[in-house]
Structure formats: structure tokens, C-alpha cells
Image 1 (spheres, rainbow, N blue to C red):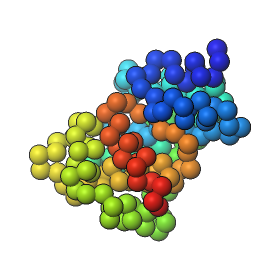
Image 2: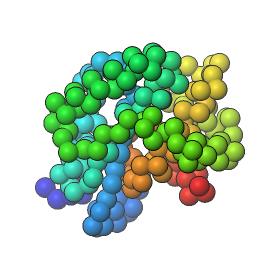
Image 3: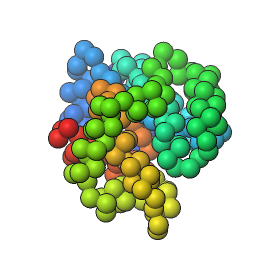
Image 4: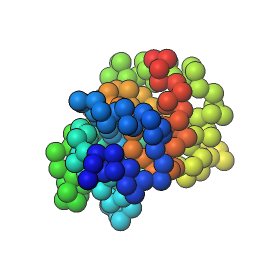
Length: 188
């Protein structure tokens, strides 16, 4: 199967088709997805794991961000509990066949001064309403959000820049965050 077909099969949306075709023609291409280690691995995880394996087969370098700090911000447990779940997640993803990916624990990159400065720079550019709207689809309770829930989408955008990837893979619930990233990441 040709790389374009591999990358686009079983996808709901590609933003944008023209950019994807240009990316496929590049000699080095990097993609990532992030998982919040907040519980058991379930059938839904297989959708993105299969897509990441398609991307590997199409020649992409795949990075999996195991977003422990995101889980912490989202009140999914103590850091110790979350890190245990993160390791369990990595082992499950490898067991599902996602081998050869670059697994990154979020806190290993997200606690650097450079990362934190980028989060602060983006937070100056993005209104509270835009951050809140970007989280609405992700299913978080947004009636009375905490500050940490507003930092979450900004961190997710900085993850894309920090990991130096060319594309992000996510569910349709991630679309607003990814579109916000396309708009604002060039400024940092």
C-alpha cells in the first residue's frame, strides 16, 4: 500500500491533504500523539495505536507522549500513581504492536525552563475563552474550570513544538486544540 493510503485509511479528517502529501515526500517526517495515563488501556486506544503503526509503515518517526503532567493537572491521581499508570500504558502500547516508537514521559520535557517559557508566551496570546472552547470537545467539565484545566491545551500545543514533530495525531475531540496550535505555534 502506498504511504498516502496507509496514512489516510481509517481517518476521519486530515488537515490538510495538500500538507500531508508534501510531508510524505520529505525524507524525514515525524508525528506524535499524546496519551494521558489516567486508567486502563481499552479498545479505543487501539484506534490511535493502529494509526501510529500505519504511520511507521509509511516511513514516519513516531513519538508517543505519555502525558503524566496533563493527567496530574486533570486530577487523575498523585504523580506516583500516574507514573505507575504511564509505565503500564507504555508496556500495553508495545504489547499491541507499537514498537520502535520514541516514548517520552511528559515531565521529562515539560519541566524545563524553555518549555515553561513557551507555555507562558502562548498563554499571553490565547484568551481564556479560546482555551476553554478548545477543551469543550475533550469532555472535561468546563462549567467551572480550574486554572490547571486552562493550562492543559496550552501545554498540549507546546508539546508539539517541543517534540519537534511535523504532525499530530488525535481524535476529533482534539481538533480544536490542534487548530489553535496551527494558529499560534508559529509565534513562539
